[in-house]
Length: 184
Image (cartoon, rainbow, N blue to C red; front, top):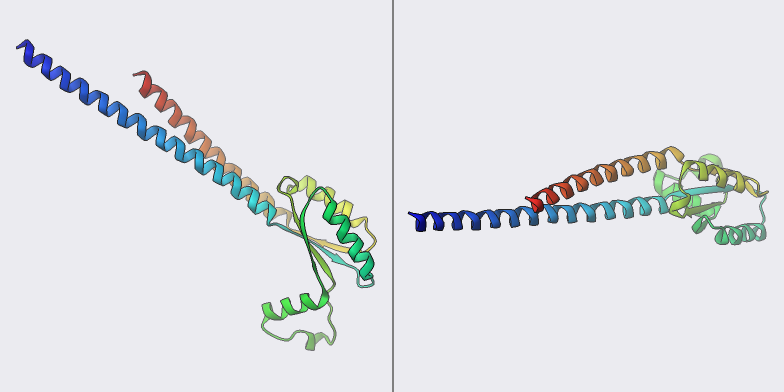
């Protein structure tokens, strides 16, 4: 009887070891996957912020030399990732493609101003810093108007931070489960 009981206990112990190893492996795999998702979410947030356009509309009487000088100043500014100049003619072509019609016939002349699209560095794309940048850029004599959507960035940032927070909570939960399984 003792031999059968011993055999039974060995099988039971072996089965217990296997189930613990499988459980721990699954939890640690899930923990790794959640960590990868968190890193990707942070990268997505950075990419989204750096693809955000801040458009500077220039005055109609701005000379080409002052525009070039302003572009050079922007290129060395700490908050700028890259800039792109859009002339009146380029803007008219873009509008023509978007509207699928010749809108210049209606106006007679091109009412669109020259513009500069600025892609900001990710760390500068938040409400307070956007206001500082806006104030700084409006101080230039060739700047007529600034166009940006601060609410959009605020919403995207909030949603991504919420997702990362939930994922971190899940990671902590899985880590606690893994520790409990290892200790048992």
